[in-house]
Image (cartoon, rainbow, N blue to C red; front, side):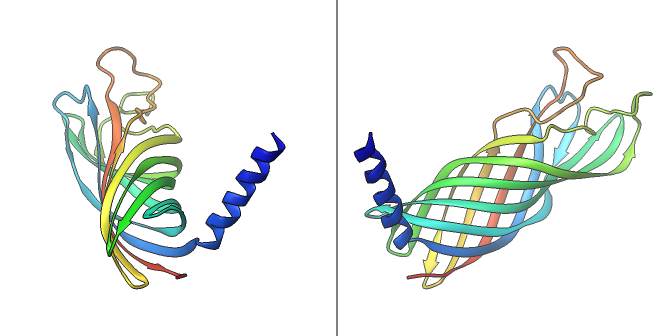
Length: 197
């Protein structure tokens, strides 16, 4: 057990010696989509994201890249109740496996999100309790991410798709098989500056 711990510590030190810190920012094309939406139509809205990342080399062209991002997400709904825009402010933590060959890289992995706040606007007719089907959201979000890009010296440009896998709708006054189940879908384009080798 002691040897395993020492080996693990040595691997972490070796990885940190080849680690590269960076900053990134870009645009989001975001929508809330899912099951049981019935006649509701949803539309992508343009928002943004920004944050930091840390890339640690593992073996050959493979590295691991955790990130901490502020991301504005949400979408636009239109149905018989009216028009409604949701702006959801998330702190996201993607943990990505990354493969780099020459200037090209591909990346994929899970993303854990925490809803910090939400803004709602539009013309909505809601129930007497004050909760409509698109006005309350769970704090946690889990997504799967995949993307690709180019590294040109210290600069990176890339794109990524984030697909939410859990229902984030938190409507407590509606229950049954017709509940709308909402998932985040975000298409991202970004530029980044990476410090290090």
